[in-house]
Length: 201
Image 1: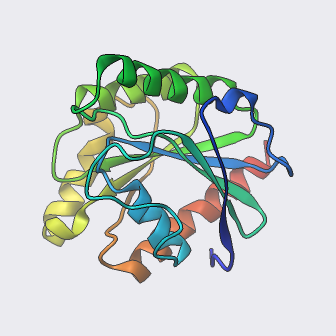
Image 2: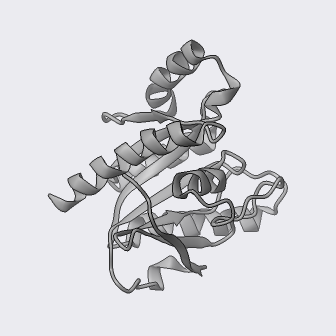
């Protein structure tokens, strides 16, 4: 996939009440705070400031919609697992994510971002449970690959699906936002596959 056009459309605190116009397929991204969602969106779309990147985790507090190639929406969900917020705020973010997963009519696939350097956390495993509970097709995106050797990265990525608790076959894509072209090629090819699969359902 070659992304020629990408633009921010809107944010939502209650995505269940949002009806995007036009109603296009949605591919959502989710993961722990600081796993690299915003950087990945910017790298994939070839824009440095499309999604806001911060050195402070937990900045994505709404559901953000980006229109890509006038063909589908990338949906950036709030990061989870950020320690420096209140319990009530964590619960609100969790309800927002689960509300989107359970109620979105256009969601076709979810990209679950996991830091390839570490074992999945309890929050990651809870997210995997949600995806299976709601029967949402998923691809694991292994981020921070530039922090490991190539062989170590491949070995770690091969184990992520089992470690996070996925009981159905889930592809894994290894990416590094430090290698922009390789990331765009790897993830862009997977997006082509996802959209082709969604058009057949």
